[in-house]
Image 1 (cartoon, rainbow, N blue to C red):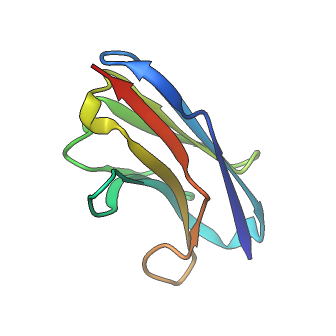
Image 2 (tube, rainbow, N blue to C red):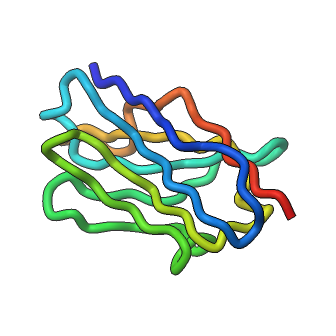
Length: 119
């Protein structure tokens, strides 16, 4: 089992920045990828970004490219999502996710943290 705990959400004005952090615990040696999804009210859950645990390659949704960055600290088992130039449409609950070695998709999800961007 892997446990994920997010932190760093909150309220920010449009154009501002927030940094989300996710701490993984448990069987972290089995993690191959970590990332972030978000879900706005009345909308489908949306992939935002991911980073490979080995090598650090990253993937971003088109909607956040150039504004969001993702980084990891393997020693601390943390993944951060730096969000810049925030827009009201970025308002959502943001979920940290983890995928395991040898498996497709994401097996573990955090409880979510609210990000609200005011216009």
